[in-house]
Image (tube, rainbow, N blue to C red; front, side, top):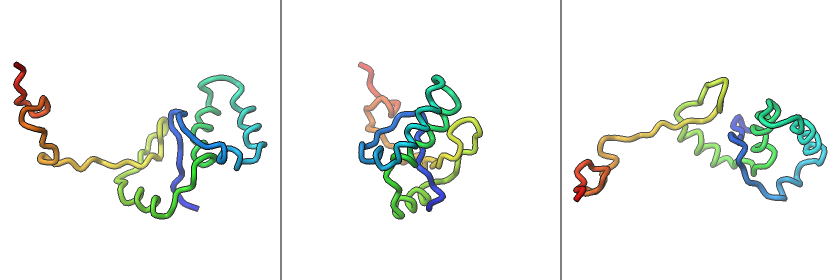
Length: 111
């Protein structure tokens, strides 16, 4: 098993019926029972982070390697998205050269 786990922050995800039915129905019944207490409950936040391991196609070794190679840090916040792999942009002053007449260049003719 990998030390990287797919998660779903924000509760927005997509899956297939195949992945849903790979889980034992008792998993879904237990989860449903835990979530029926209300909206925006702690159990919902835990469930949100469980969708990836429950419903995603497991990462292949080359995907894990790519994630590790392109990550520069791990978010360490105890209140939101803790453990998210981060990648700092590698911009240089010459990495973005908009056309001379574009608004982004600062020389755009407004006439």
